[in-house]
Length: 281
Image (cartoon, rainbow, N blue to C red; front, side, top):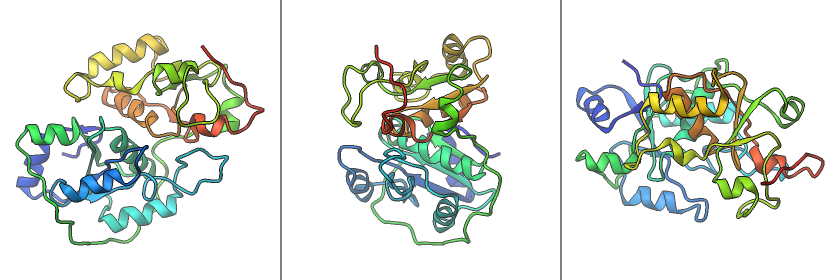
């Protein structure tokens, strides 16, 4: 059985004990210190895990008008996936120590590439340690495969022009913190505020106090309270740069809902064009 949304530490240990082919991605990162995740990885990571760096591996080239973390090209992502040993049918498990934010980005990217057997370790490094899991400092031995085969994208996206032309028809969820959404503070982008018509769904609301995702039924109820009777109809997810929005996409998928589409450029792309409307409050 493959895992396609979340996997528990116990389930991962069972896969390891059974010798199931798998690829582990340590996605730890810190926006304020881009080298912190790799340092933490070298200090200790799950046996066999590769480090997936947000800027180098999970993002593309920035132009100044396409957001802070644009999507990598599908060809570049396919080559990176192959270098990690990912092939159709191989179970991939992504994790981090930051509430699964960056792991969710890797999950979404691999689903976008067409890979179905990818899951996020629920609770991340903390859950692994709590279950008695060990960490190692040795990097794995490379066993590269060819680039991942070209498949149709399994996760839809929306670009800025399409979104601006359909704001009245979509349900737009913004994963940023409420104070950033309202435009009271903006630590990362040059303009404060949000896209008109958006609702705030702070990604941290997807987690229970122990850092694991809330039960599926609870998440279904919460997303329904935002989006109405059909919480999957026309939902578009965004955040500051297309990273934490993936956390909401994962939460909806875990809840058994059609997760909707991602606006990859998100606020950092949207606010780079002064002709686009801005809302505050």
